[in-house]
Length: 222
Image (cartoon, rainbow, N blue to C red; front, side, top):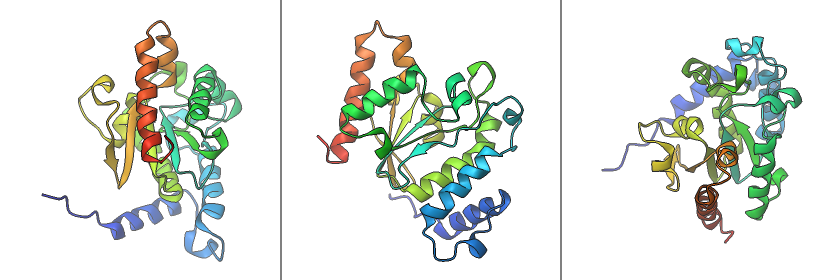
């Protein structure tokens, strides 16, 4: 039996409620500008000044994400690390360098995709984000997805995979298989940091590439 369609009116009300909560008056300020050209900078501004959870007290810079606001491909990681916290940009450390190589191997340029994280501020000592931090930060990611409308999302690591499809299975059991998030195919795969920690295991890198080839095929980039 097919699932009943989601109530898009309720989704819209919740989305507008969130925009109002973070100080964006959509109806008064939208005017004739397009949704991406106006709303994305406003969401980024809200992220940079966010105090919705305690992580704002220990961050150097919040990390909204970067890339093409009309990207067909979106990468979502867990949270910023040390270098990201310093620069205010996602995936700029060693893991970021590997992600850039993966993107280029998929025949994209980094600036053609959109890269962000579930949590926009670095957790102390790079610990795993707490559930309450994820919940407080989740409307930002949801707003970005609603505006970008990517054709495919790649979830990098277990935290990102659980955001889109919570479950009890380990990442090794679910990676490589698309699942649906509000009509968007999501491909869970290993985080680049995990690949680096397992450089001696060639099969880890091979599995990530197998996953990315499925993404490429879905996007018509074989």
